[in-house]
Every structure is written in C-alpha cells, then in structure tokens.
Image (cartoon, rainbow, N blue to C red):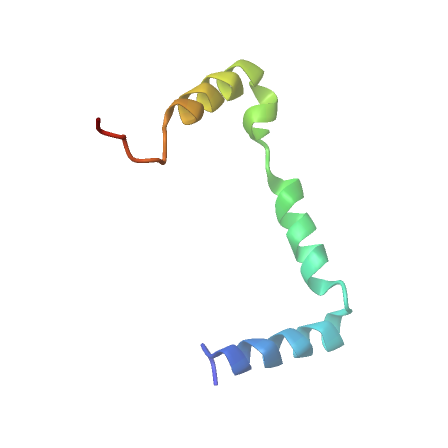
Length: 65
C-alpha cells in the first residue's frame, strides 16, 4: 500500500513502535542541526532588504478609478 494515506499512517505507526514516540522529532532535529548557512540570522542586512522587497509587493489588485 505504498504511496497511500493509509500506508503512510501505517508506516508512521511502525516507525513510532520501532524507534520511539519521538521518532519524527529526532529526525527533524538531526536535519536542523546539519544546517550550516544560518539563513537570515547570519546576515541581518540581507534580511532587512528582503523584507522590504516583500513588503512592497501587494497581493491586492490595483483599484481603478
């Protein structure tokens, strides 16, 4: 039943039984610790510029008179 919702739930149950209830928290933490770039935390000025660009982009349509 690979690739179905039911199969995914069964796999999750099996993983939790085999490796503990915090299985997904552990593998998620492992992935987070592998990061070396630091993201915007490493470059505050870049974060400020990117935030300003995002703030200028409107999701609303332009109102015509």
